[in-house]
Image 1 (cartoon, rainbow, N blue to C red):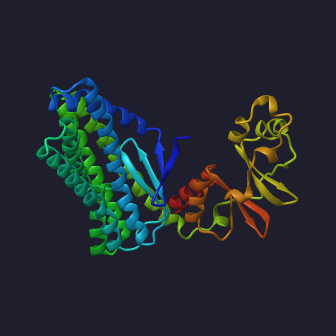
Image 2: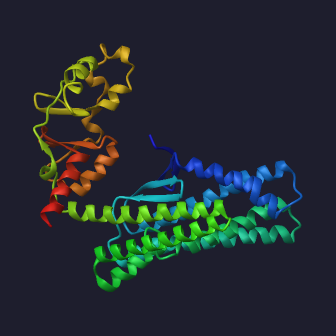
Image 3: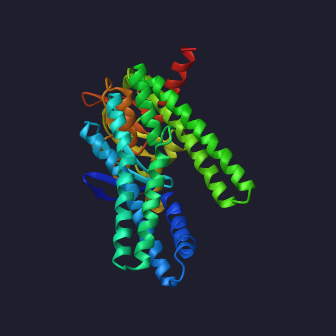
Length: 373
């Protein structure tokens, strides 16, 4: 499992990716032992530790507020938002669909940097009031630095490279002017790759000039931005290709099934060890009951395999692992991600007709692209 649920804010599920802990402790260390001691000398070590912890938590709270603002505007535009995930480079709102108009795209993207600027102003006001009132240097220092970071975050996000907010604003402008959403996405993605290469080049120059840590961070950020720009455009193309495709077009028909009464030991010996499949539909008399995967078997202690049955370990059909033959593949992909198995069963009137795996989807897309030239 790469992420876990932290809680819910304003109806949005908040999840944390494992990679987030890398940047969390790196920023905590930087604040505690570098930033605050250098810029605000004369305080005790305990003060710097407290400043580091509070500053780091408030910084990520600022990032979360930035993403919540995107999600609130998206929800106001009737775009379903599944939640927000915090990861190594900040946060990401998980939506089920893209904006339907250029104006919606502009508003959803633009509210993020605006929120960061507002937060920067609020932290600056806290620092100014604390200074005028003769408050603690620790409070003033944390507030000043968070004000600066939020302004820098807004400026960086406004750079015209997809998938940054500025890149999405750029896409909205091209979309509005050309009326072609795919063309706008391609232009914004290319701008994102160009910006990434500039960051990588400047980072290498900085590293060879003596600023090794800062330079390597710019290279790392540029590399991530480049990959994100490419992946975002490929995801858009995939959605475009699959919009008119139905589940029955991509499914594997009449898949091999297993009975729920089968023990896990029998399942392993007679099916997993004799077939190339990592999952099997569970059915009785043609009626689908669920899905059993190799990973689910591995979660059961080996000594229990002779007594535990497939029905005990499977994911029931009621848990979102079934789709209709006429469902769009773009919707099927979302269900596959939600189920967490990378597979769904295709059923009609309570009878199993096929199974769709990630490999089936990628194979269909590959054949479609080859046929198109």
